[in-house]
Length: 157
Image 1 (cartoon, rainbow, N blue to C red):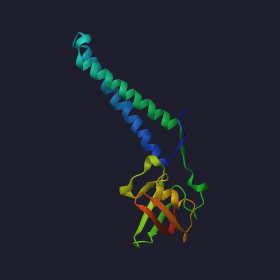
Image 2: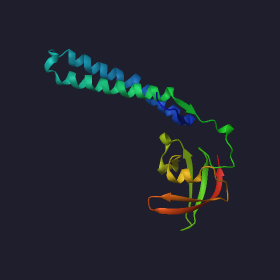
Image 3: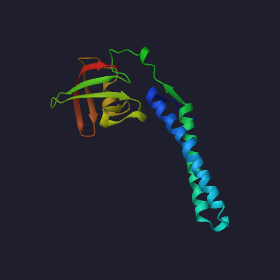
Image 4: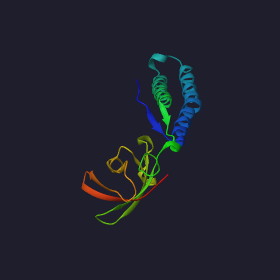
């Protein structure tokens, strides 16, 4: 049994779009490659046929995994979340009290993390240290380089 994973609506839609691409574009393409290789004659010495069959097997495995992930996906209902505390999907503005640097992060499910766009996974050390805190609270967070203390400046959705 697979574990339940939480997604934003956009994150789940990305998964569905990827699955549709695999099923409607790549699957027919590989079937065509297999048919072409089969038309070339003796299958026992046909490297193209073997390669296409292997690609088909890998594609079907990928499709199966995506289908399972979508079946076990749950959408996060933002309307039922307390916006005064740092929770998943919160946009948090924090200040590093050591160097006074101010950063803004959005806490997202692990599968949607993208540091370049300011989205960090709720399972990251920084996010774990911020969860449950309110504006004005400080969080001492252990990271690989040592401990850093952050002050929560703003929490929004």
